Image (tube, rainbow, N blue to C red):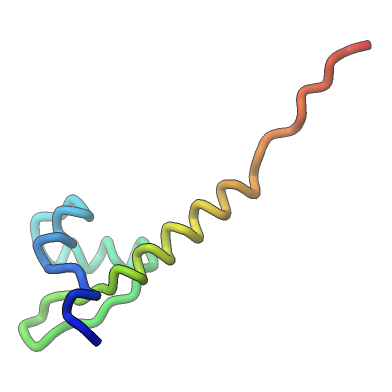
Length: 73
């Protein structure tokens, strides 16, 4: 795998709105985003994993939809 497939730790912290790695890891678990830890203990996340996770959420939201408006008459 190419390193360009992965978020940097700085990007992940910014994306998650976290300031510390332990909070970032908790956020990743809560969001259901798979990650690995590198030799330095930094979470490694593929761009595709985040994209897949949020595309899934978008599809689920679309399924909810709204009922059609019924006009009396």
